Length: 341
Image (cartoon, rainbow, N blue to C red):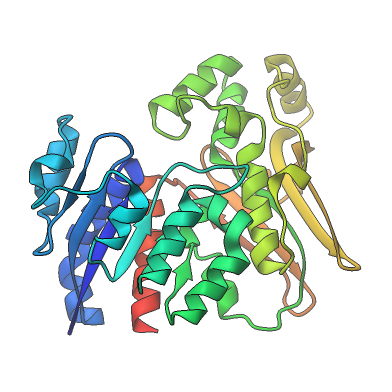
């Protein structure tokens, strides 16, 4: 039974959810998958870092973080303040990268993953920027070093989107469409129930679905970057979010919601991409959908993605009641998939 040393780069909501899930699943990982692990490195965004070659006490790290402390308190030795050097000296076999996304260039997360792969680590991430700006380069680097670069949690959290298609060769995908952003879907659903736009956004923030600055969701950037990741990987066509024809939901008013509801329809922020003749057309915009649409009953924080293929017809995947735990599960599943083959 192999012991895997893990480095957690980013210890915010997702990183902490992953730590709790690792503790919860420790016995199952040993008994079912012959995987033992210890965390040797934790790096937060601005609250310190810890390294311990003999293993960090995860429960203690979670408790310290919960009460506003720093992982510095449990580090066995002084650590580099630069994350690239921190990764190099972490002594890990596996890195989980969960730093904030950059829509424009995927940095510095791409550099972190490059460093991990070059240091002989598997690398798993929930960071969408690494896929849309670095997928081919990072995948080639992983193959060169005999490691895995997986990213299931970048789209629809732990729902098996990318891993499903790793097991569906030659499926001949031609188009992708879906409701990919949970925040806007929740906001529109709350407005149907009578909330104002601002009230709906505040609710999404309170329950942890929306960021303190929800602009990336409201303006359609999050949906655009997720669509770009799907196009890049599954349609095998490098694509970045600035190429998506993008309109957010900021102009949707309660009056518009009420009029749509009276007509038996709903607004959804819908993402579309189609590949024709080697070219990609991609769009994210609010659309009115009726009961005949597969998107009509996707309410609250749920999401859906539909794939059109020449072999399977239309394949749809739905996720309900997402959260940081489901994102953490995607990272854990990538880990298990990579080390068990």
